[in-house]
Length: 130
Image (cartoon, rainbow, N blue to C red; front, side, top):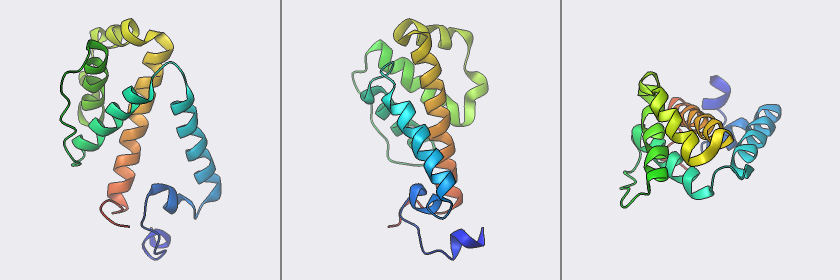
């Protein structure tokens, strides 16, 4: 990881990936594909991203007055980082009920990706800098 530590690029994960343009391009394309899919609203994705970041030590998103669909999404986001093995069939069934099959797959994929991004940011000590 010497190229990361000596690079001086610490503003965010995208900046670090800029040292590997092929990875940055794929990272950006994947992020855009997740966020462009109409199966989930940007608000749902933002709730999930905030919850995953909270699990990794970020600010408490203090969710209040969530709809059933939002609460279902936040539950998955809360479990994904350290409790993914506790996601049960009933949780996935609830996702499908609220978001359809495409939305359920997208939400599970997005929360996994947010988890990976949060972990890489921690590993590369990028949080809190920039």
